[in-house]
Image 1 (cartoon, one colour):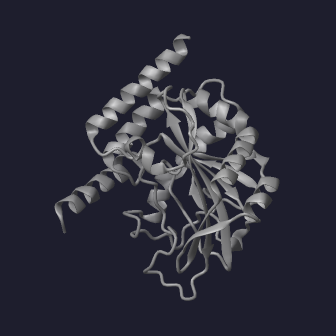
Image 2: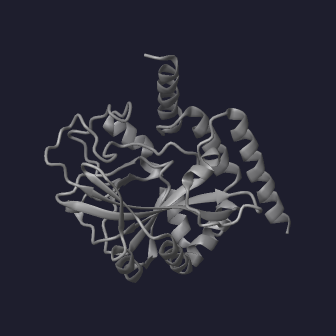
Length: 290
């Protein structure tokens, strides 16, 4: 085993023990201080109260009309064995995002107050998960092992159903933030591929993202354990990736290339994380002084 692999295993192990997360320990420390000093937990509306407590919340808005339009204009981007990734014509994508933002305006405004920062849409992903012909427990087809996404807390998502999703459609499963410790204990969770929950009653704290076409869920994939599940046939989904932006000069461009933001949401060096955290503090102070 190489040195960086050993370092990564130790880091993830410490994170599970100390923070109930499967992330690099440096990310967990950043996220802890981000939650403590950057977020604003006062006077939250019911939607954000639920999001703050659980790390996810179903939004009180439906995008069925927009979804019908999207489904009629899907373009195959890449066809894999058990997954098809789609795209949209760029001009059409811009129009759709503007329509989505209009319906999400209240939620986005509340998120900006919660995070004391602007919210940018930096990604729009569309895909179909297809049931494998042969299923092996030793393989992972589309992230169906419980994990936390490897980013810091300035990266959140909105999932939108492109079809009706029931328990047989391979819904996303989410462990609420407040249940992470219980989840790790009940599952004897050691790593992404090392856990066992046989004989445990886990239905009381694992949320299944079922719902109607056009339903949406706001989701902190960094701080919640989650996984995809295998559908009986297929599951068609859309995902908006949001960046919590502390820099007033960076405006919404709709270029929608997450690679342009990786140095913000997936920093490598400790000094970069410290500098980024200071920028969030400065931005928060500037907003509160107005």
